[in-house]
Length: 245
Image 1 (cartoon, rainbow, N blue to C red):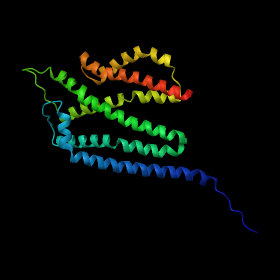
Image 2 (image 1 turned 90 degrees about the vertical axis):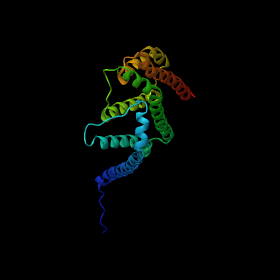
Image 3 (image 1 turned 120 degrees about the vertical axis):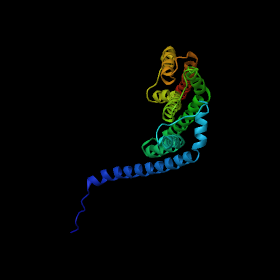
Image 4 (image 1 turned 180 degrees about the vertical axis):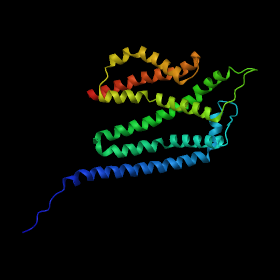
């Protein structure tokens, strides 16, 4: 009499979980490797990157510790490498979650990720080319014959990294609203009535991210947020029309 093979139910449950963990580990390894490569590229180009980042400041920086110069170069290299590796990070996240998503959602999510990376670059470019020079000019206007600025490398890196990344995140507003609308439909009438609140919140965010009481600098930051909200209304309206069709 043939012996009946017993089936282990835990094996069927643990096997997919183990496969997911293995895949996640491999994708994290791929991203970590790409991050190291991007950081290495940043280190090779660090002199040019520092020249670009300090150009709006218009004055040399200083460090007050033995390892201050090395720390600044490492921070610049890592910051540049992280920004350069963001597309790879988004791609690995997309490929990891792709099997659990409906086939029709794959292209949509991929477009979201590409648009997010694009808006991040646009926000950083806008901050560097438009907003940052006016902000540094205003902050430097308090110097006179008796008051001179002596800015350290750590202070400047903390300021400029938070400033640039803050703009990049703020420019994600259209995607955030589109994502919320795809989960829960946002009434167009309510969105139009919230425009006054959006204007006030934009200036509040501008006051937080731009450490200047100058109304011109705050307007430079708040105006793109207001325009992005208006563009979000158009995209949400088009998304509603596509749902109706």
